[in-house]
Amino acid sequence: AAAPDNPFYNEVEKALEQTLGGQPFFQKNVSTPYHYTLDFEFVLDEKNDPVPVREYTQTSSQDTFKNMHIENKSGFRRYAVCIQDENSYCNNINQMKGRVQLEQRHLEVLGYTVLFVPHFAWYSMARPSLNHKIDYIKKLISL
Image (cartoon, rainbow, N blue to C red; front, top):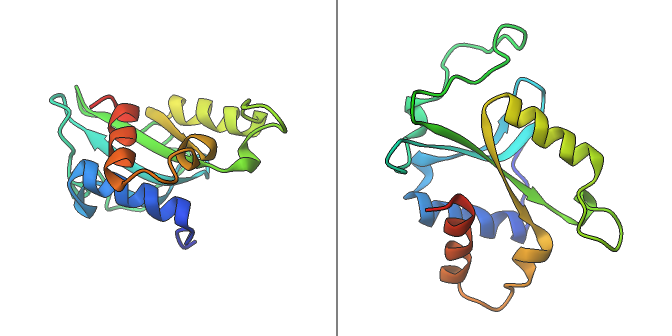
């Protein structure tokens, strides 16, 4: 499936690109062994430097049953960035729906650090510059 083409997704992609140093350091629209589709995926090494995608992607086809855990090198952390629109939350409160919480748990079992970018936090920054949004992503990643 193609990556979503909406302003929210595009702004997060642009902020990630600036934060990590460009397209070679993250993937978008990534399928996982539990059949979730991640908006973005990237890996940081032990020094918090981004690892190029070509160094951690598998070139062979993935057998879902043999590959249920993503191997991280010692000190490396694999991140899943999930964009959360209004359908990811219960009505009138900022509580994630059960399906989203289950997805988070599955991704953590697979070895991901899951980062959510909620619509209400992102859209509260509607006026600020791209630099403000990059700062938000850096804070989310803890860089």
